[in-house]
Length: 327
Image (cartoon, rainbow, N blue to C red; front, side, top):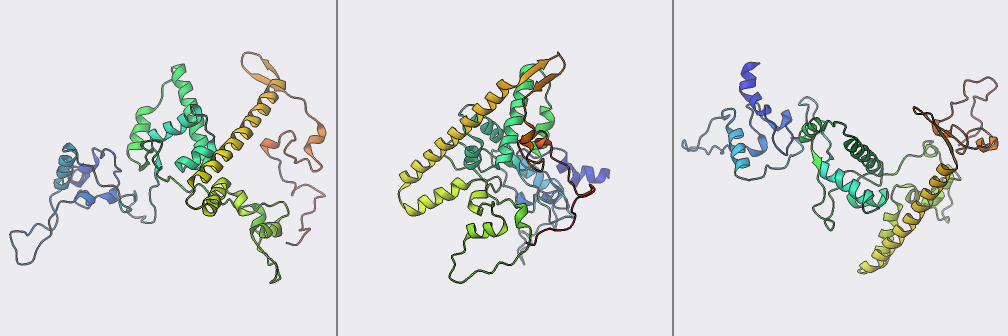
């Protein structure tokens, strides 16, 4: 063990700055594969012949010289992002850099942009954008309260993982972090069915959605960013007219801002109508409700306890447990 620590394992004592430090990035001698400086052996030329494997640490010292000379380290390849040598199917996925998280928080808190707009511009999923904003808000609150943060631990972990950087300026295109427009699987579409269609009938995505359920929307309306489809249609109809796409984008942003303002007004009105009692330790909130708001089956969204879910009725006596319809 000590022989390995003083030989090939010495490359893992000091992690590379700005790079991952996985086992697959090094050869058995402890040399970084992507910066290997070994020259190729030419036949019938003893002067150019080198050892089959250089001494451990030779490529590491060359890498240190590259770092000292200001030369950047080559970007990790797919082979370098395998933390487990025996599991070659697993690739370490990138995480958001600290600069990108700060940019997300700045765009929402200072510029007043919506989560949807930030997600489209930075190509980060909307759920992740919302989570980053909430966590950064708590972090800033803790800093104001004087609480200690695990900053050294977070910095050490981030240095060992691949990261998605923030765009250098507002006009630069962001590096995609993840797919942002994946179609969610609706529960009504999990059934396999065969629907006969006449040859003269125009059967599109809207018709297919109605086959599964009368209330199911087509795919272009159920994706997280339906506005991207509409902007693509405008760009195709008005080729070479970037002003049309810009105008439509501004209209969509204004509509979203108006809807967001209406949602905030309703939330503020509901908060003001609630009666609050603070006993110093707990804050109790009382609201007026109607018994009819739970609906006929007691599962309506406006009913009490809807946010916590309703237990299934399949184990109660008197409930019909066999299928009552054919899909």
